Image 1 (cartoon, helix red, strand yellow):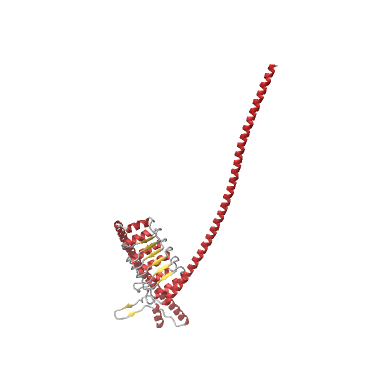
Image 2: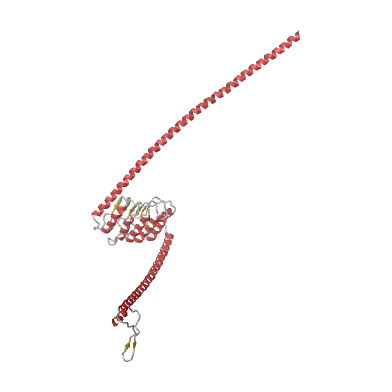
Amino acid sequence: MAQAMEDLSEFDLEEPDLRAIDKGLTFYPSIEVLPKTRLTETLQKKKIEALREKKKNAEEDRKRKEAELAMARQREQQAKRQQQEREKQRKEQERKKREEEEQRKKMEGGLDQILESLTKNTSEKHITTCGIELTSVRLRLLTQAMENNTSCLSLDLNRKGLNDEDGVSLAGMLEKNQYLQKLECEGNSLGVAAAKAIGEALKKNAGLRSLNLESNNLTSSGCDQNGVIQLAASLKDNEALRVLMLSKNGIAHEAGECFEKAMEANENLTLVDLSGSDPSLRIQQLRKIDDVVQQNRDRQSAIRRAERRERFSLYNEEFKCRQYCMQVEATRLEIEAHEERRLNRMKARFEKWVVETKDQEEVLGGKFEELMTEAQDRAEANKGKKKRK
């Protein structure tokens, strides 16, 4: 029975009711002592199982409560971080708005004219910022004017010292503008954040045909390939881009693999420049990408040839239709001319008949007058003869 008590005490969750006296004696609570039979052993096992289940449930409840408390603390910390992030973004937006308003007040010269023409959709098809200083504030104003523009098809921002913040502004413009077809950003300082933002923008953009990001810092001198990897992943969803220039950006082996997989799903890119990349980018990877690009180029050439043939056939068809219409029109004009000549002849005959009829009437009228005159003369002559008789 002592062994049974020990077994039960291992699973008992309640504190034992111990009572001590001054002489150092300890009294344990009373326990039930039963004879050692099969029935008591069975009851003992059931009681032990019940206590074990109770202890297990209590342990699970304790762990569940601890997990709930941990999740609550995590949610609270996440909510605080989100609140701090929102507050930070709000302050950043307010700062940018203040800078933009101050810059608008100071705006003058070529950039002011470009912004006005972009806002009114009266700009040139190709816009270059050569000779114009572009700060982050000025670039934001330019991208805001480009968001709803439909007249500009090409924008040149080469060698303007653009950074990651400027790249994010450009990406926001590309998400909204579906009319810009060419964007030149060669020789700037666009980094990893700019590459990620442009990659996300390319998933939504359906108008850009050529993108030049040569000689930038999209991989932080080869240390961070995440931006270029995301840019490569966006090529799976983009169906508009035809030319992508990424030379001299430190693209490494890892990003090269992503470009391989992306190019397998892209059937529209006809030029991808990855020259001057990191030495870890293998020649085999470049060859695979070039093979896919060549296949796309051949496919696009076949499509263009088919389109030219179709246009030529449509032109021939249209030419034949025009020739037939011209023949029908010539026949109609000939019939009308013949009918007009017939009507003119009938009119001339009718006019001649009218003239002849008038002449005959005049002749008959003259003869009638002569006969009447002769009759009067005879009547007068007959009256004179009767008088003489």
